[in-house]
Length: 250
Ligand code: ADP
Image (cartoon, rainbow, N blue to C red; front, side, top):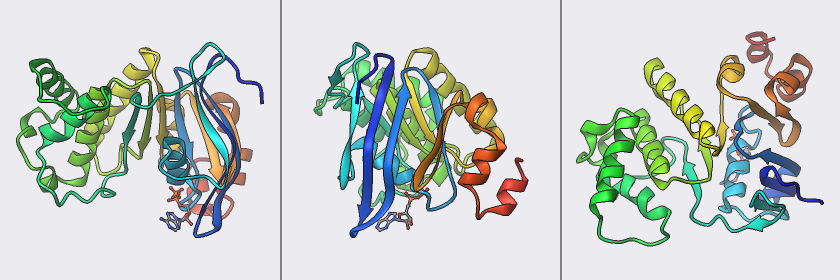
């Protein structure tokens, strides 16, 4: 397949299975650089699996994921991929403060851990302030609510100053005001030319929040600009067994 210049990520012929049972089939996807993209589909459609496969956390049965350099080449983005996991998906039994977690983001872009510098602490403060968590720096991460943890993960990803971000339902468990603040942050990342891929649940807000969308249900139903592919026919194909959800948007 010919690699195009203006894409940040290319997923080629990807099939992913758990215990030999495929849950994503023949995924071909090109994500343009600088887009804010929603991944939508019903529960169990494979959204989280897709994100994890793109991150290299799951080994595909077939296919590959390429990160592109903007000049027609493939590049290694090892330390420039930010990840915000779904809240509640991480077991925080070990003792770590909020500041420790965000510092991991600062180190993430270096690829190693070092004694925190003044600039690391400063960046940690700034990113925590961006997500409204500046007063929680010395709190244990395990003591926070799911929504608060989600904001700390977001701060960690921001501190990483990545090129491509993958976020798994970053609005889960946050209040309306925080959701607005997170949307503003996502748009800021986009304005900086970053590529942001977000697993999203609320179909109503897709046109407001995103400029690109991928609809999946074990396979890609459609992927492209929101105004072109986010329409009734594609939504029906994606959510064919979810009548109530569909009624709320089409
Ligand atoms: P979504 O994020 O769209 O809700 P997932 O990617 O979480 O979907 O799951 C896709 C399918 O894979 C579901 O049927 C789910 O039950 C299954 N699945 C997810 N994680 C695992 C796992 N670790 N082991 C086995 N099956 C899994």
